[in-house]
Length: 158
Image (cartoon, rainbow, N blue to C red):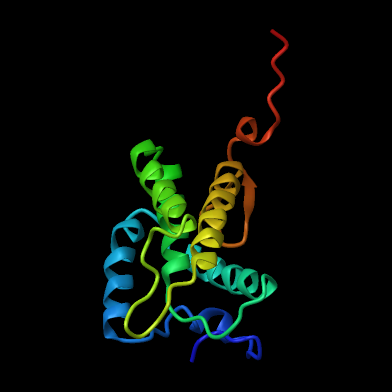
C-alpha cells in the first residue's frame, strides 16, 4: 500500500517499495542500481521518511507509490559527492523539462508525481551538505566534524 494522507507510520518507508505495476518496479530498480554503487544504503533509511513527510506537508492528494523521489535523491547525492558536473546538469535538465510540462508524466497505470522528484533533489543537495560537514566514525553512533572548513562560512578579506 502506498502513502496516503491517512497513513500509518510504517508507510513512511514502505510506500517507496510499493509500485503500481511490474513495469514501474523494473524502471525504478534499473534507475536505482547505478547510484547505489556510490551511496550507502542507510541514506535510503533516512531519506525515505523525509521524502514521505515532505509529500504529506505539501498536500499529497491521492496515493504515492514508487521510489522515483528517492532515486532522484540518490542521483543528486552521487553527482555532488563525485563532483560530476555533467551528471548534475543532466539531472537539472530532466527536472526543468518536467517542471515545464514537457516530460511525459502519465503511464497506462499511474501518473508520475513531479513533487517527489523535486523533493528528492532537495534531499540529495541537503544530504551532500551534511556529508561534507560530518563524517561517521567507525564506532556506531559517534559523529565528529569531518572538514570544518567545508561547513564554515567563507571569510575572504581580499
